[in-house]
Length: 320
Ligand code: GLV
Ligand code: GLV
Image (cartoon, rainbow, N blue to C red; front, side):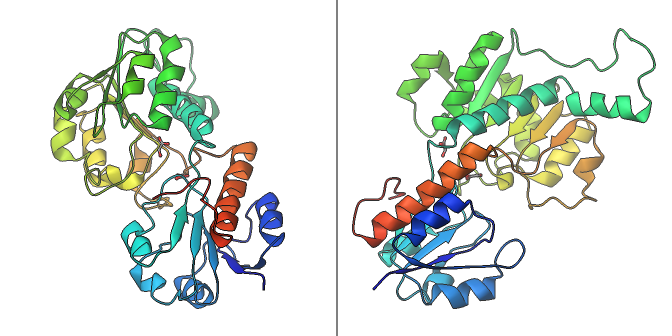
């Protein structure tokens, strides 16, 4: 009998659907946007495999009804939306999509860094709004990467790729903080420093760490006070690592210089959120891995994880 798999979103890339259909019976949420919790709970009770996204909360309460569930494949590298311990306790296998999105996400991080440092969205808005009077010596001046100290929080695959991509911009120094010192840091000449030093010395501080109990709200009133007044903060990881209210204060009082966020708390960020009134804040809608090829590869890897789990093979990308 073919195993059953529930796919939580309508517009998942077809390559993954085809792959799953080759050996499974699939049902797919066909409403708009994220699957409502009640529907997810109902469907997950009947299936052996679950294809989910980072917008689906997978916790003990949900797993309690998922009596037949053997494997979960999330179409994301991050898995802070999933209670890993609860999965482990019940023997539910868990796969994510590392590596395949590293370069796309690192590219977006560099793009957002340059965009924020050189005030691109603000400048482009001026052209539209008639704010472009004449060439002006000090108008729209930003900050250069050359000669700067770039700090990276979390030198994992994505952080390391960002560092590699930034080296040609000739920063004076690359520094990083991580739970443990990383051997690969030597390949980009990055120096391991304390969190305090990362905060106080970075001209650009890039967040590429996972969201954990240690990193949740790590950027707050207290840590912003340790940063340089012209520091630029970039977050392409998870929104809750930064306290949004404290960030607004820090940006509007000149405690720090600017911020570029591809992730926010909550998501989506309401259009009337006060961060959006600030010129020194660039907000993108969580598009780090958003290239067509990357999203197709993420979808197929998530499907491959599920197929492997259902047939008793090791998952190509297992979380534990
Ligand atoms: C995106 O944020 C991901 O975790 O893949
Ligand atoms: C994080 O998961 C990374 O790949 O750096």
